[in-house]
Length: 391
Image (cartoon, rainbow, N blue to C red):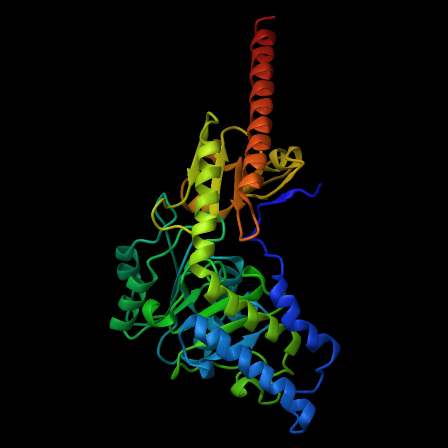
């Protein structure tokens, strides 16, 4: 029996419909999209169809979508591209302290190039406060980058409200939406973003493909130089096979959005209800503004790595990494000020469209059993320590 997969925020399996759509471009349609002959036109048409499928999901123009190698490249292009193209207007950028490394590391790089970064704190639920955004804005602020959904605890940020602040101050706004697309509605018109990053493998598409939404009129300095692919914005012969897969994944996401949200929310509620029976457990994230598929649970005085090792039939992710002489708590949990005794035992359970109620019941039973055994061993160890202290 394979472990029950509860790590959909790390990656999703390729949907059968996506694999089927990709197959002809693995076996038959091989032309270079830049070629004007029959073979090139076949693949060029496939790319433009995928671009339209993604634009329909995001509610934007197809011309505002370019394909990249994934979320990391999209984030790099958005931040570096905008910063370098607009540095004559200012060098101040605002982001949050709980961004993905694909944002944080880019920001650190930009600091070495003379840019000034402000890293906003979050409240105890992992949410950025609008007042903090407003207070951080300066005359030389040119860009704000705040993720829509946090990958660890699932908290959703007030993107529309932040974009309104940005627009009022003539500041460009970017959002890393890798964890949001396919899980909650992502409408660029309603969100008000100027730049938006996504990754195919987070919503049942293939790995190694992503996209960047660039609002019409936004100027970026090129990240990859070469020929004039992707409207002369991103050089390199297009990855037709995976672009087709991304397009189909976007089409499915739009079709199944309401159904999947309802399904995943119900399963998360069941998992939370079951795990609430455990003593000394706390749940992290914002209870109102949160991804429907994500549950971050912290078990007091446990080490996440040991906990996961004992979960033989459940695949999940840790919120803390334990080393020989220290415990490295994630920046997100640290920013949320989760007490260390809970943070070190944090597990992220992220569910998806292929999970079932039966799986959640089985997983809950094993998780509770592992916690019960660990708590029993901890009590026994504590008694032995107290006994030895008086001997």
